[in-house]
Image (cartoon, rainbow, N blue to C red; front, side):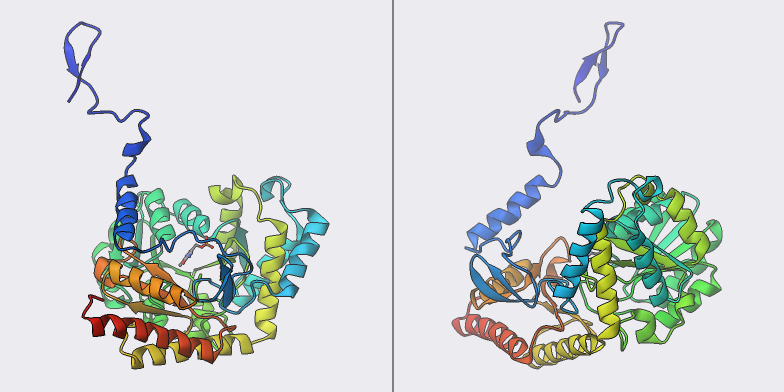
Length: 424
Ligand code: PMP
């Protein structure tokens, strides 16, 4: 410890080594450099931040070359759909690009209310509120609803935005083992009574694993223990249920059993933003007090219009949901048949291929890229090292030939390394 001079003339302990304005010691920077150096040592080009040169649909163009694309959230193939682009352009012509103010203070446009009514109807909910970002929705909503006397209980694999919101709230935070409602019940039984409010948070369809919780027992235990139930439907809307309405349609649970439906506009709805649907007092409170809503600009009108049009297309063209689910089921079946570990994927929209190490996942992604397939490797620390994977987002736009060719290319890359006796 450094000593600094006190006014009285004697030496006193000062702050430990202060990095001052030295930005090279920022926490985490060294880790990023290490990953870069490891990639270079293996001769692998970075798979991150590659610009796509057109619409990133089931096919895309990177560096002037065409790829089959499994790395975009474009579940129903609506990004780039001319109807959605036209809706966004019409909103720009009418309102300009920006809402130009917080909605509370002159940023409200008719399309906000229209989008919220359509989303509320999807969940048979009384009300809905749209935010500028899905991530910010979870942070600000959980941060606003709970305080230090409260309890947040969430799945171990919950999205970062939920964990950040819980941290912001100051509530006690407990993670339970993935999809294990019995463990969640034990935690509630042990801790519920020491807290004011309890919030149980799940995802309707997990983004890294493509699996889904059993919603009915979770809803039942939330009811029994007087906990609010929140379900993040980011990867469930347009993906789960016969017509894409989400996890309640898939599971047959009444939508009213969930107190807080959360979702994003950035995936099936091919826009950007987040939303909360539920009972009126919840939505009223958030509309007047959630910092990420009140102190942030209103959702951009073209994005609200694009999301509204996407929802209308999803409802009018249920064949898209059917095709997405059939594509995911085909991918899952072929990947399993080829001997790949697909974890707990239910094969509705997301299929992970777990390769057991970050190096193996990065190598496989590079081999597929070489073969004309763009898929994102998910490496440590985003997932545990032994669970490093490629994550395939299926789309209604993929065709069976592309799916077959992709699994075949993956198997060929693996078998080629095995034949040469190289590590996978
Ligand atoms: N929740 C989940 C489960 C997500 O996967 C994501 C983003 N991938 C978000 C929230 C944040 O949504 P957005 O990207 O629209 O900000």
